[in-house]
Image 1 (cartoon, rainbow, N blue to C red):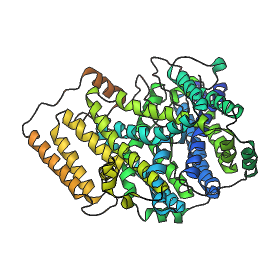
Image 2 (cartoon, helix red, strand yellow):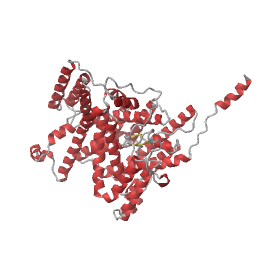
Image 3 (cartoon, helix red, strand yellow):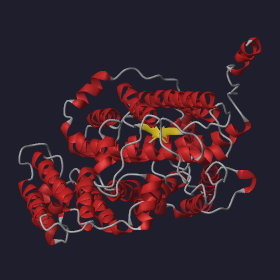
Image 4 (cartoon, helix red, strand yellow):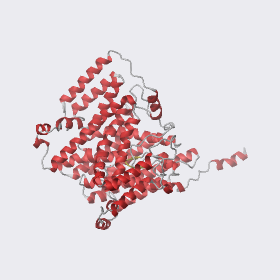
Length: 573
C-alpha cells in the first residue's frame, strides 16, 4: 500500500507539452499563407466591390477580424492541448482556423453588394453584412443539425456548389484571363502541388511557392507599380477595434431578408464543421463536435460585434498539417501573426506587393474543389438534384451581372423594361424570381428533385409545401418579405405538393441505395434521405472514419484521402 501511494503522484504528473516543435514551422507557413491570401482577398472585395472607405476597412473591419482569429486560434490550441493531456500523447494537432472563403463571397456579393448598388451607401451595406455574420454565428450550431438531418446531401452540397461556381469561381476566372501570363502558371502550380503526388524541392509549401512565382512574374513583366508600394507603406498604423453594437443592431433592424441566406449557411457551417471534425478523427484526433461548432459561432458573433462581416471557421486540412508535424504551436503563431498584420494595417502594403492575378487562381481552385465535392460526395442517382440546387445561384449571379452592366450604362431594368430585355433574349424577370433567396431556394429545389428520384413522395410533398410557405412570405423567390410576396410561385409549389401527395398514395417502393451510396453514408453520414439520415454526432465526438472529408472552407486544403496519399497537404508539398 505504501509503495502504491508513493508512485501515484508520478502517474498524475501533467504531460510535458512543448509550445513549439519542429513540425510547427512547416505547418505554420502553410496555414499562414492560406489565411494571408484569404484576408488579402476579402480586403480587396471590401475596397473594390462594396467601396467601403479604406479607413473603415483598415481600422475597423480587419482589426475586428484579427481579434476573432487570434481568439479562435488560441481556443483551438487549448482544445488540442487538452485532448493531448486527456489521452496522454504529444502528437495531437490543433484544428486550423481562419476566415471562411464561401462566407466572404456570399456576404459581399449576395448581402452587401445588392444593397450598395441600390442605395450607393457602402456603410449601409456594411451594417447588413455585420448583421448577417451575427445571425450566422447564432444559428449555425442550433438550426444546422436539424435541417441537415432531413435534407439530402445533394441539396446541401449542390447549393454550396452553386455558390462556388457563380460567386467564388467566375469573378476570379475573369480576373485571371485579364493577366493570364501571370495567373496560369500560378494556377498550374496549385493543381500540380495539391491534386497530384508531386512535391516541390525542399517540401516548400505550394501556396507560398505559387504566390511568389506569380508575384515575380508580375513585377518582372511590369504589371506592378512601385509608387503604390511606397504609398501603402505610409499608411501602416496600429489600430484596435472597438465595439460596434449600434452598427450591429442597426443592421439587425431589417433582419428578415438576411435569413434567406443565413439559415442555409448555418446548415452548411454545421455540415462543414462536422466533416472537418471527422477528418481530424480519421487522422487520430477526436475532437468534440459541439465545442467546435460553438467556437465557430462565437468567432462570428465576436467579429460582428467589433465590426467584421466575415465569419471565421475551422478549415479543412487538419490531416495535412498533422502529417507536416504541426501540433498546437502553428495555430497560435498563425493567429498571432495574421492578427498583428490586421492591427498594423499591413494588408494595404501586401495588396500593393502581390498582383491580383497571383492571388485569384487560389480562389478559382477553391471554387472548382467545392463544386466537385457536390458530385463526389452525393449519390450518383442524385446528380440531377445537385444541378437543380446549382440553378438558383446561377440565376442570382446572372441577374447581378445584368444589373451591374445596366448601372454602368446609367440605367436599370425598370427603365429599359422587361419586355425590351426579353426581346433581346434576356429572361430577366424569370431569372430574378428564381434567384431571389438563391441559397435557400437551391436547398428546396435540390431536395425536391432528390426525393422524387428516390420515389419518397411524402418528404417530397413536405419540401414542396415548405417552398410554398417560404415563397408566400418572401424568403425565397421574392424581392422582400411580405404576405403573398410571390403568389404564382407559391401556387406552383402547392400544386407540386398535391402531385407528390397523389403519387405517395400509390405506395411506390422507394429507390434502394447502392453499395457506393452506403459507403458514402458510412464515411460521411447524413443526407441520403429523410429515412436514412443518421442522428447528429453526440457530445463525445465522432467516430474515426477511413478518410477525411473534402475541402469546403480553407484556401489551400488537403484534397486527397488518408488511405491513398497519407502525407498529401499544402504544407508538405
